[in-house]
Image 1 (spheres, rainbow, N blue to C red):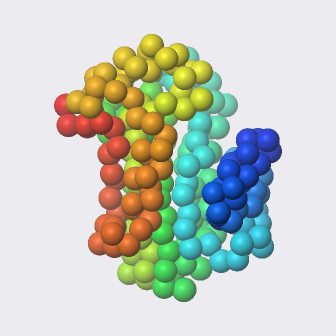
Image 2 (cartoon, one colour):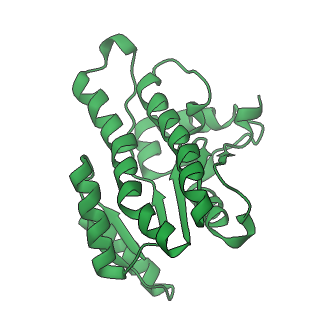
Length: 217
C-alpha cells in the first residue's frame, strides 16, 4: 500500500499504524495541485510498490462562501485538487489497470454534490464533477476489468471537520439525517473497502451515499 499526503508526520503515523497491524505500507509525499503532480505521484507509487491495482481518490479541499465573495484563487485551488488531480491520476494509472484486466477506483465525493445548499457552490460543484467523472470512467474502463465507483459521505467526524465546524455544529448537521448522528471515519473507510472488494463485483459507476439517509429526505 502507498499512503500519500502533504504532511510527513501524519503520513508516517498512518504508515506505522498499518505496519503495526501487520500490513505493508510506504509513504509518498505529494503536493497535488497540477497534472504534473498527479503523474509524478503515479510514477513514485509504481516505483515503490509496483503496478497500482487500487486507487482511492481522497485528496480534497473545501471552499465555502457566498458566490459573490469567492476569490478566483480559491476557486481554482478547489477545482485543481478535487477535479484536475483525480482526472490525471486516473489518466496515469487506469490504462495500466485495463491492460492487466483488473483495477478498482473509488472516488470520495460528498452528499452536497446531490443537492443545493447556500455557500457550497464551489465545493459541491467540484464534487458533482467528480461524480460524473466516476460514471464516465466506469463506462470507459469497466469493459476492461476496472470497476470505478464513488462514495458520497455526509457529516463525518474527523480532525478537519471538527476544526472547521466545531463539535456542536457538526452534530447539528448530522441530526438532520434519519440516522440522527455524525458518521465516524471508519464507517466511510468500510464502505470504500466494500466497493473495492469482490462482494461489489457487479457494481460499476455507482455513487453510494454514506450519509445516514440524508439523501432520502
